[in-house]
Image (cartoon, rainbow, N blue to C red; front, side):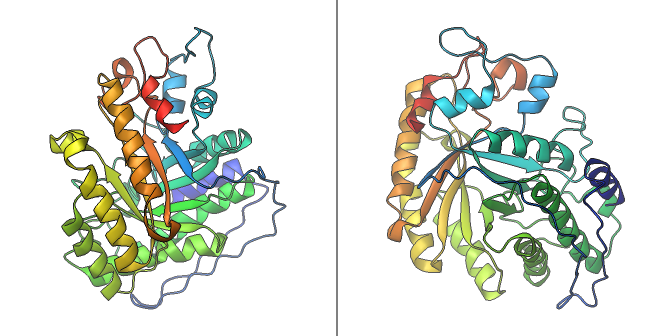
Length: 360
């Protein structure tokens, strides 16, 4: 954690003077940072009724390796502009505590996240921040604690989650960005910060999630907190998780879903009804807003991916009581020869796939 604070202070040394108090106990701990007054940079006044988004965590890394992006006429353009031209109005950014894995060393750090968020906001984009609470990828198969937290007690982990969340969001706020949404954890059907925060100990997981919620609301109560689970077509999976969240008094605003027919070896036509039914059930059962925060299709099946996106957007828009907030494509710019990722939405010539026209 100390490394993160040092990095943020170097970036915002004139603005950040934070103090931290210890957790008094596992169930009812309070952390009250001392926050100086910061002049807020005006944000883009444009508002969008429906969020059409892209997760672009790879973008700064691609640019650092010299990757170039082109429009259909062959002209070189900023990737964010290409996405905006196709209807994208929201940018999702993952943030790692102290990124150290081989391929992405130094990327998706708090400092880089701030820089990317400022860049996207200047283009009129809305911002979502996705906290992995790890030094690398966190997903259903792995929720590895950051190295700096590895030997911490549960009480210390509560403090870590709060302070890391607060510090990153405060750095964003200091730079003039207040995200519209914050994810506390990434694809966490089995919990996060294993083993302490696994779903085998819901009492502890609930406390960790609530510390992320509390830190977010301390920055700005209007930020919506998302809890994110994968397999958005799997209603039983979602009921199991969110029934437990309700029993354990987890605080959140939005249910986030991933939807990847490719990974379950099925065409979207076989599961889109299940996704729609699950969205409707989440709204009616828990009275929460819903959002597909990750979606993707095979880049070689352009029409199929475009049709899938149209169907997902339609399913979200039809969620009861106007509680469907939007759809976000995961790493559309991650062209296969650079990333090795099959579910991007980019062509080998550096141009966006027409599948993204579904967002127009």
